[in-house]
Image (tube, rainbow, N blue to C red):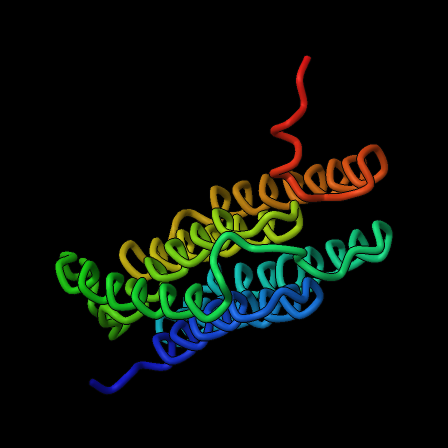
Length: 218
């Protein structure tokens, strides 16, 4: 199947998400997340080129500047402050995690094939963009469930959010711009709060392994 421009970059975002599961280096994960989000922004820009609707161009700029650059730089600053650069342990060995991610891509393809076609075919979108969105949601969920540090779980959540956005963009051609910007602002504030909480956890307990917090008792 020939990929459209938007599908090509959407698949690229999934590939970088799979690469995230192949490393325990937190700075590398942030870089891969930034590239993944940059590609999601490029997908949005491709919608602008196909539809000539300016809201997609503005959304692309906001995604690239605030999420790909701003959030990534903020989390990198958090890592420097807490002086933690590796995910100490994972619930799944790295090779198994990567194979599971590839399996999830197959599941996403299976699910996307059963989705109804978008109501407006003028943008020449196929199921590939929706498939990539589902894959990002699944991979982000796996990342959150198998990593132990707070920063990794934040990155997993952000990957899920990228997937939800991409799926919405592919199936419904996005939300009203005001709604999308409101959600993006909520995500930005949530990440900043999570970063501050991560710093406080490290300062109080000298680690950011969230699994060890289960041992706390009143």
